[in-house]
Length: 423
Image 1 (tube, helix red, strand yellow):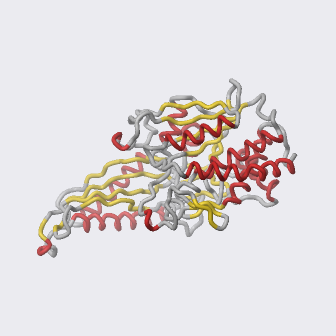
Image 2 (image 1 turned 135 degrees about the vertical axis):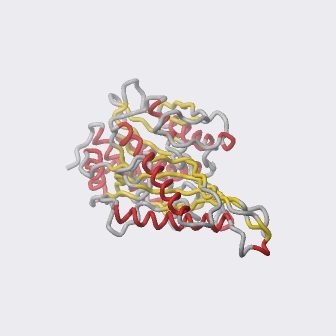
Image 3 (image 1 turned 30 degrees about the vertical axis):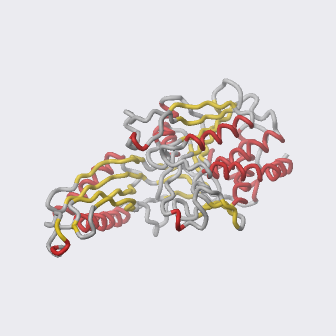
């Protein structure tokens, strides 16, 4: 069966690459995900899966575990998510999860080819979302097509789900809604994120904040005495980076190496000014803050606010206290134990497929695995393709790694659904 499985994966690989290209062509940034979801829904239906569209209201979630929803004005109407399942009406034995939203592709003029026009070069597929994480849908569909060929009755008695969610890149509310509003759960979850064919076991906590800094406007000829809001804000950014470095020393992350930087401060956006020869009176700094797994998002918010207040108190140039607003992620840190059955068996499937054990690690980032693991006690792990320049210019995925990941995933599904034992 193993040889037949690999031949079937090879036979369907080009179709999987074409699916990935079709997904990349749809610019599914947050608020505009439906066209790409429709591509997945059609593919899942053609595969014989039962497809259901799950409504996704453009409104904040009252659940305290939710992230801060994007502004409704930025969102298209009638949003939804897609659940594809093997036929039947029993409970799911296993759930595959992938997010269809991608980060924006700013500065497309710097890309070698347009970000939403997929391009193949030297064994890689380029385009926004090619790796993060539309590659996961190609992996999942490729594995399922091959299993349909070699083990057509695999899911006859126990069901598999494949969930395509939105807002993974900013809130996690897509996966959270699928659980609390639609009851989409299983005993285990595999998230097909790009992990370089390794097992991503966990991540740190992540908080998004906007800091509005007020200065004093004035003509450029008095720039030497005006309190420039942008320059004041940059003092806060540098101060928070020092705070982050101290946090790394005092609360190290045991799941990462001693030289790691788990709690990075990232300045993602700055909005300020209306005239080149005027000192801006206000500025908004949009920041991502990493924090320890031992903290809750509420504790992280409290500590960040204290750090900002202390920085301002030590700097007499601030005319007023900056305003801090939550925007987006309120993500807990998480970590699946390396000896958990899900991690152990997925590693065994990978070793059987490729002759080597996969690396196991955690990152100073987050994924929707935290929601299953921390909020609902469901074992969840990330596994997927080899990607490059995630969130950056010329994002791409190695096409062979999609095939390699599908070989691992298909064997794992054979194990879980009782058709194969791995020695």
